Length: 149
Image 1 (cartoon, rainbow, N blue to C red):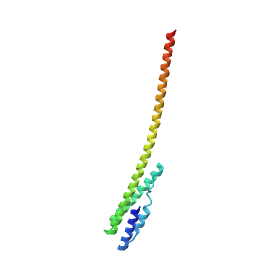
Image 2 (cartoon, rainbow, N blue to C red):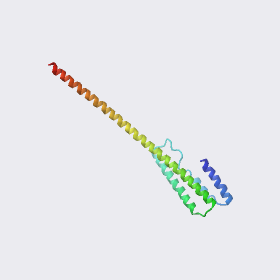
Image 3 (cartoon, helix red, strand yellow):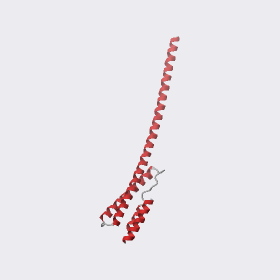
Image 4 (cartoon, rainbow, N blue to C red):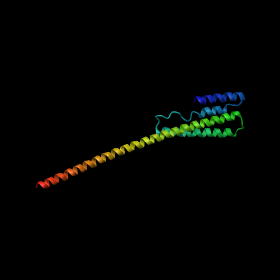
């Protein structure tokens, strides 16, 4: 975030020196709050919403980059283009982090399902072993009782 603030100051200084308008600066300030930085402790739905917000911000920055490419060549345009590229990259990183957290939650859910199924299999094995033991004991008892008669 400090880098973004520094780049705003740079744009202001360059714009002041060149006498150009700061309309782009306002657009940058508005778009920078769309994609959240904080993703820890959020639900899957919140992460999906954040991912959509980041994708929208990426589209905004890509649009800003495209529009600055169409402007006449100047130092101000280059600063705007670089700022747009940096912000698009930051939004892309945030989106990928959100996607990774979402995948991590999916992996945790699947691991819990696997653990539950392993527990059920273990109980099934115990029940089967108990059944075999009881069956074996009955056969031995029946053989002994037949042999005694």
